[in-house]
Amino acid sequence: MMKARIFGAFSFFLALGLAPSRARACGVSGVDGVSSCSLAEHDEALRPRWAVSASGLYTNTTLRFSGDLHAAQTREAGLAALAYMPTPVLTFQVGAGATFGGSLTAPDGRHDFSPGPTAFLGASWRVFDDQEFLLLTSLLSFSAAETQLQGQPSIGYEAFDLRLGAEFGTTLFGVLRPYVPVRVFGGPVYWKYQGESVTGTDTHHYQVGLGLGVAISRRIGLFAEGIPLGERALSLGVAATL
Image 1 (tube, rainbow, N blue to C red):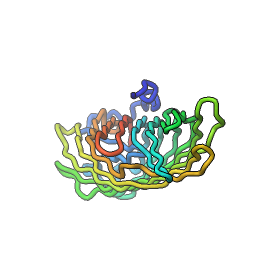
Image 2 (cartoon, one colour; image 1 turned 90 degrees about the vertical axis):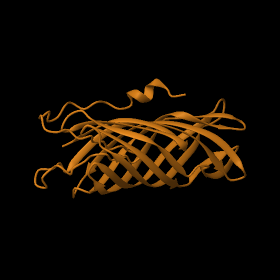
Image 3 (cartoon, helix red, strand yellow; image 1 turned 180 degrees about the vertical axis):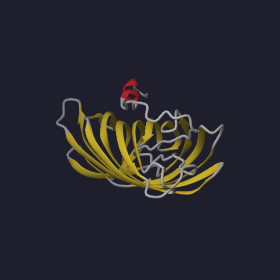
């Protein structure tokens, strides 16, 4: 179940540049690699080169570990990102945050996650962006935490993840940008189960869902994404170009 605290994981930025020019939806998220800023209408000399964002993320999936061990996993995270746009079609981003909830449910019971750090690097390429748009994305992330079964010592948990994806969508009324994200991913998870070191990975190496960017002003945008197929996820965030 989604907990209310993930919706408070990100803060809204102070309104920047509320100039009455045509607004575009703009968003840059963390682990899910959403980048829905459109720069097509900006003159190269004036267009923004930087963007910042904050988001909350919830995931729900199943991990398969060595020894045919399966564990249901939920995780909640708050993330912040800084993006640099050297050209109108290319974006690089770096970010960090923390996972602050969730659990691994294995045959011996529920192992609760402690808060732990996460960090990521990403890049995206805008293939085209007129009425419709196509974005290719990549994201490399790392997270660490500890898990604890009631009455037992804490156990370290580390995860690496590489995601490649595409987002195809359209622009409606100049301010709404619905899109369909499709991603594939993989990476190892390192853990200990009943005293034995195990290595795991997701049982679903893909995501298919729906996303939406909404322009609030010339520089501020909101974004949301729901993933019902593959690794299930929900993310909400706010972004601003600088």
